[in-house]
Length: 150
Image (cartoon, rainbow, N blue to C red; front, side, top):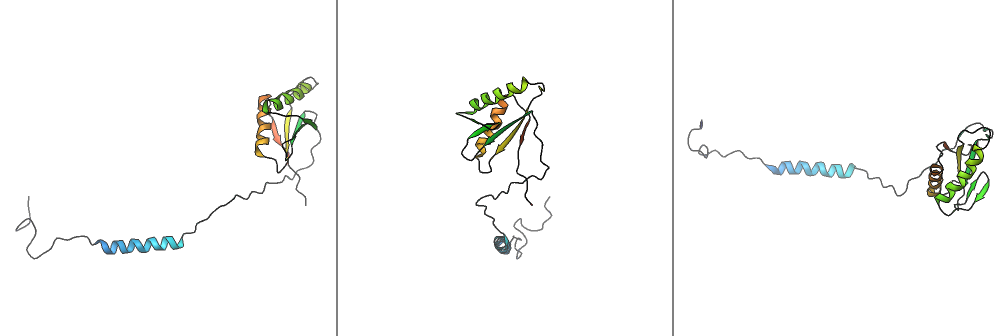
């Protein structure tokens, strides 16, 4: 049904309504400029991390511990004895030898591995210790931290 009178192009003398896009574009440009001016861009060139220091009482020596240390040069020590290491499997074999000594003692529970890593040691050397402990079948692993000096 066509309710309009006259022709289909509209009433003579009256124009069809159309949307004027120019004011709309002007408003969008003002909003865009406002957002560009007020936005702050943060650039992180490096991530500054301060590792926490532990505050705890001094722990007595427990006979069922394996102390594994790594220095900044990647040298390893197991219970204060230097270890010649070529790869992770060799380190795991050395850990297994120490575990065998513990299992031969009266207290045959699984020993706790304590990792003493130098603050400047590479993360890969610590991961190598974790992997060697896994290969040796040890699951109780902890990290040593320096006491916070007051």
